[in-house]
Amino acid sequence: MNNSIELLEEWQERLFLHSWRIALRENCKPDDMSMRDVCGCADWTEESKIARIDIVDPECIKERIVEFDFEKTLVHELLHLKFSLLSDNAEDLQARYVHQLIDEMARALVDAKRKGEKDA
Ligand SMILES: [Zn+2]
Image 1 (cartoon, helix red, strand yellow):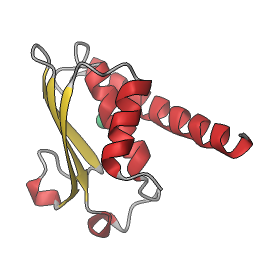
Image 2 (cartoon, protein in one colour; image 1 turned 45 degrees about the horizontal axis):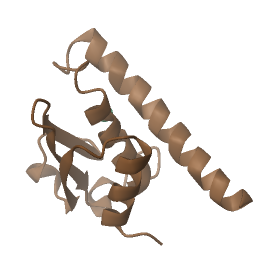
Image 3 (cartoon, helix red, strand yellow; image 1 turned 180 degrees about the horizontal axis):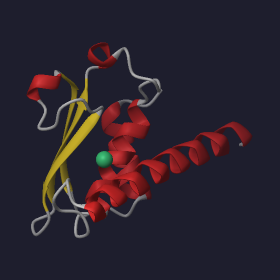
């Protein structure tokens, strides 16, 4: 099983995000994250391509409908960097739409990768 840094490097590569400098924090307590009630969040500076991705401690989000998946959460947050020039205020309709697209893409990409690994 890959560790989280390997997964980060792998997905930066897959998503053509090599030029970003990304700090990853795992097992975050919800209070330490910049958004409430999420599996992950990303804060970034688009002009310098620096980001921090926080992923929640799975113990803290046990009663969610969909089971926590570290890799899908990571890919979701990386896609936010990919779309950083399109999203801005989280209340704005475009940003919410981008967020929904990102979630579907993260699931599709990780499922495709896992299926490819199974078939190999
Ligand atoms: Zn999101």
